[in-house]
Image (tube, rainbow, N blue to C red):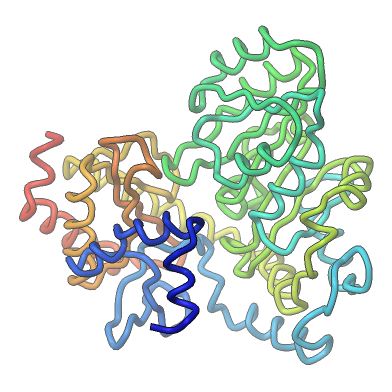
Length: 406
């Protein structure tokens, strides 16, 4: 044991670290499903170690992360600008490709202006905390993403939670609210449940009570909308949604995030969002990959059609098998199992059979609502999905999981 280790063992701040043994116990039992090392491109099939696996746990809905055109754009941008920006957007890190991307995103979302952040998590963190001051209120769905919750915590306003995708619950909270600025933040597509926000009713309530609406389209970009441009367009409500947020790490085959809004809101965020001002800029490769992905998504609507074909194929077949898929109506499909250990056992079975899925257990979901989360991509073939469905059905029967829900 080193001198440093000895000192660490005497410091109270590390007591919680020494007492945390859950992950080690799961590893010893062969039931640890996290931080799996992928040794290949993120595609419909991936390599883990020396094993080829069918990927049913990726957020690359359009299947563009390994597209030659996207990779070529990233390479060319790196050759032109270098590997990084050596500073924040606020000072020395704004490149012309960042400005081009923001203009393209504003056009894509039918908004006046847009602002790019280095990660999606930072986008929500930096936008919400900058807008919600001490005399303001932020209303959030109880199933909103962690980045939304943390963005609210960083702000100085009052946080008000309403029932999941329940406009009536939201209206009750708005009705009882004291005077002050009001911001409603919802996910366009909920990342665990796979349901779509009831945006028409939400914007109606917002209008009645003088609240602004922000939609997190992380899982909606590429998936919903006439051009893959999100939830607001899907419902024809772009003019009534004040802020559209999106990420690059899913359909846009890169990493980063953005908000699109009025030029007034974006100008304010550019000078008040600490998460943007004090972070290094997105790399040129990231920006170029997004620009090319947007072009492909708009020019190839058949990708979105294939994505929905795959989503309905999986969702309907899994329901017919007897699985509880909850509220899902999108390419995110939860298989609600209930018990945490049953989920880990099912994950292990699927992993050994060459199917990559994501186990989600409490406290990430409510008690007795542990699930296997499946995500499909536009580039999955029917043959791949048929194979996965056979294995999922066989595993659930062998483990006695379906009988618990039938």
